[in-house]
Image 1 (cartoon, helix red, strand yellow):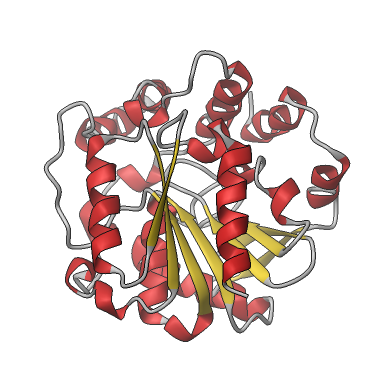
Image 2 (cartoon, rainbow, N blue to C red):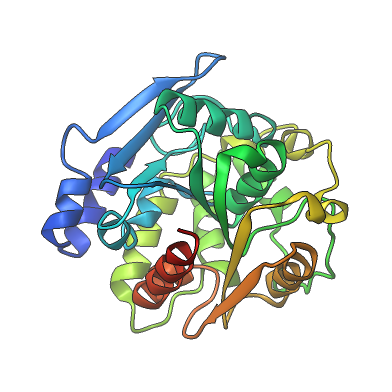
Length: 294
């Protein structure tokens, strides 16, 4: 089954309300070309102040399907496929993604935005907030890694990147997807089979190209953000599921202690994918925080 067919499956798994259909109707799906010739696919829905969402590793913009219907009622909501992900071109390279984000905002003629990043998308949001503080109205981080901080990692929390890289080199991307779906970070409660199918469909579009060579180089950032969190000036909300891994709970607390005035919300009932597992609680937390920034 092709990636396009898998993505279409996402919309058949659960009937969304009319507002969500408006968010993904033909015409809202657009693209722009970056400075180095990479086509970035994005979607815009709703009106009001801009709110831009950044997806995590192995995901694409469709991971925000449970957020768009609520967010677009209040904000101009922007989702996009990061380079090398989903329908965007290019190879994955975190060193380039803060500039991709800046160019997307320039393309949309947006001077400042609310910024929400999930997991690796949160790493990019943090980098952007450090490099371009004047362009971030407020920052929301969902279990983001932190450049320069190396928490003690329990064996169960470890992502076996090198093992995955070897499988990709051996032409076994399906094995990578299968193993990743079984990782604690991908845990979905048994009573959420529709969400499990949605996640599976998205992960089955992951190419594994970022694992082929130079992994560490493509992840690099020249600034130790763990030692410069006082430079993050935007009002910041940290969201974590109560069943998140201990490692990322530790990182969340490091961010909470380092970013002045930041606040943390713990959402019961799920872990790393809390935005999909408990969308009503998640959306409420985000919208209440954003309302405080006006």
